[in-house]
Length: 407
Image 1 (tube, helix red, strand yellow):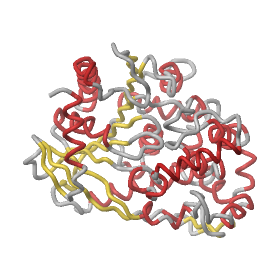
Image 2: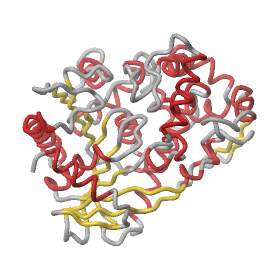
Image 3: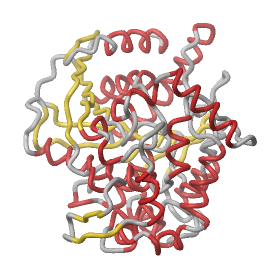
């Protein structure tokens, strides 16, 4: 089956919005999840660390913004119900009862639909005869209020940003919500990342407890991560909470570099004003901002391994030796595919981070190029004129992915 046909049919099946559907050789289930980690998000004047049973007064910047959170997309994050209770998907080979192998699939930044990822998951499930979990990052997919995807409202917000910031680049209705939110409170990037990290740990523990009947509690799992989802995958693997990721393999697609080596200004990802604010906060003045934010300072500079790993993945020079020692420790369990014409996550930056400053880390990075026009956001265009070329490239990529994950 051509990629475009698989894409269209899987999209049609999922759009039926049923709890369980079957298509060809696949079964797709929609499952519920309730996050226990919304406490890490901005909202209340006092923040709490459950792990260390400590309370922290939030920064004045966050307090001031939260006081004004009653318009547009600036809401109190810890009160967004869609982000706390939501659905995720499980795709598995049809007829399989007890799944003993799983692959967690993590998506890119500012994604609102699983459409393009469904064929990716199907390719993995088919080749490895495993289950694939499509789990959304915080405030993405179904975890975002529907308002943030309303075209008319987002068009108005984009125009408002263009008037407010005349030199803004790539402000669109697609990225208006996330750009406005990230610019106003850049620490949302950290907080939502931590929530998603804790959500994945929670999900693994729920699955190990037998929550889903057709998943063996002793299941093994790997990770396939695309774009910014790779940052989550790297933090999970390198932190290795409770030894859960000892044997997990991490496959990165168009992903892998530290944050300050990305170029996310795109009409589909972030506008330039949001990017400047994020870069200023996370890279240029991060240490100074942390001094003013007792809670995040505790999370990233305290006794939280996930925080230290997260911090090491924000800027190339920061904690480089620590980060590279972890990558070296797991070099045989990590593999990356980069695309030659990717301008959002350039192939050479994937190599710089994963192979290390002195190229002494033996993580394999394959740099591929396709014989048709593609972008970071759309590596496999759903275009009938180039359908056969896209199908060949798609199969080549996932043959490599599954070859690695099957080892």
